[in-house]
Image (cartoon, rainbow, N blue to C red; front, side, top):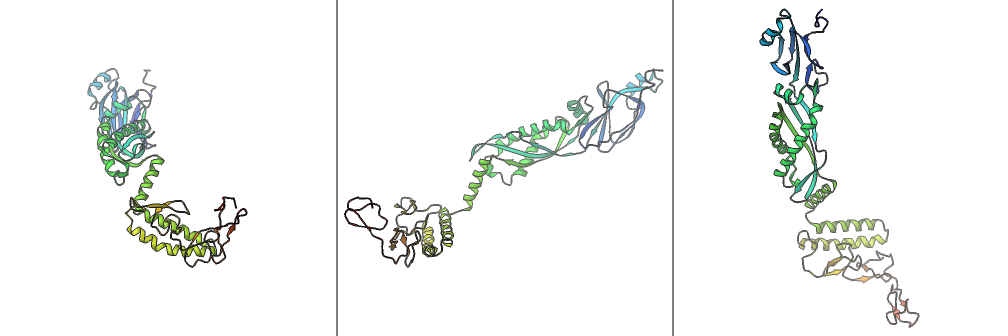
Length: 376
């Protein structure tokens, strides 16, 4: 009995990819196999087979059923058929390459990459996307990446390809994009141009990059907040009108929750609104008052306002004094029955304070005598 009588010769050679991830599969998976001369090799439409003998690619097979015999390897046949009466086994390997498209492979930046933005300065970006590949040169792919591995899946090559894509993406983004504020609507354009740059890198290994997509390019949270603020400012064309609208809404809300005292606020707001909108029509775009115009301090909120303003645009305090609350000195709108600050009836007699030292009369709310300085 010779050494081959008990061996299991490969007579039917075919392969099915059950995982959907295998790029190349070797038969047999471990070591060289005893392929019987005249064995049947079946190759599907989405496959290509490469026969290796003594570490070299001897023949390649396309779709169909092939018989491994003299017609394939005439030199090897002549050498091996002599001691085995023309029916010798062949110690060789068959590599089955999967030629289908491998889709939805994900790529992305592990760590944020530095990008010099023309408007935001140096920022760090994260980018993500997907890509599709296909083996177009099986022998080149096997020799350059697979080597002697029993099987080669997308997991083995994906990490390397991701790094290649990210490297090219960094260079391309720095050359073509000036600011991420101009990024909207450019994802398709960026994807197409980036794919063109990667064609040579993938072809070097016998691969074809059929599609590449950029799904997101995101800056840090603080940069996103700055972009959001800039977007809001572009929507609000007139800051002066916006501030006055906010003040009016605040007064309206306060008036609703103060009962009878709120009536004075509501009336004051009604008289204030025409002046506010009249002022906004003559004010420069995006400013509260013309540059260089005299300004005074609002006695109510301490804000800086135009000297000729009838009402404070920040808090609504009436600047033109028609009457004051006898209790707290708050300026009152015409016809107000109650003070909007303390609720004191405007018709009541002023509560004049008498100095206990010199018997001088002082205005309501005074803390010190205006004659002798004594604390009241």
